Amino acid sequence: MIVYRISRDIYASDLTGAGAKMFGGRWNPKGVPVVYASQNRSLTALEFYAHRASSMGLSGLTMVSILIPDDAVVQMVSLASLPPDWDKYPYTSATVNLGAEWLESRESLLLGVPSVLIHEEYNYLINPEHPHMNRVSIAG
Image 1 (tube, rainbow, N blue to C red):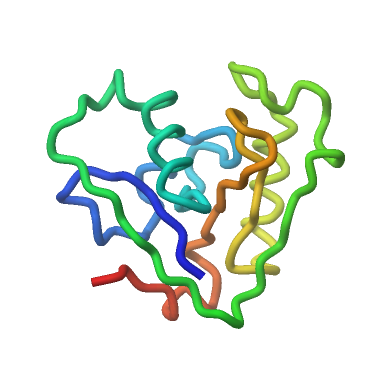
Image 2: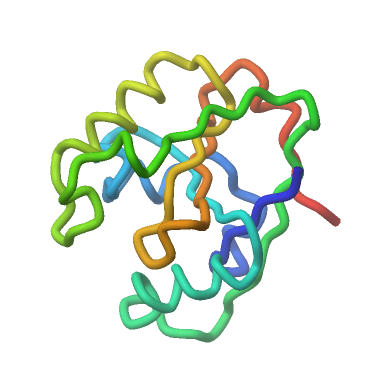
């Protein structure tokens, strides 16, 4: 499986989740690392431009392809299982708590969550503290 993310060139090989740890996000509390990625390049670009382009600018960016082992366990969150306001901004504690519980459990390497922008497509959270994280790599 290949998932994608956009990052500054200098952080292209960083899969520690340090950025998300510093700031927190819809699916993780501040202080808890996670790597946010998307199922395809176009969703990655859409998510980036909708949520981060104004704060980061557009120069010095790269599209990163992340290789996930074929036998990796991927847990999926269905749209129907989420509360009605899960996609609102500012985001609610419901999604942050769901992500935090998943990260702490280390049950799976990835968690697939519906995109706020296109509910039928998925973003993937990668748990950098999962025991199989050492099998995840950046495509050359």
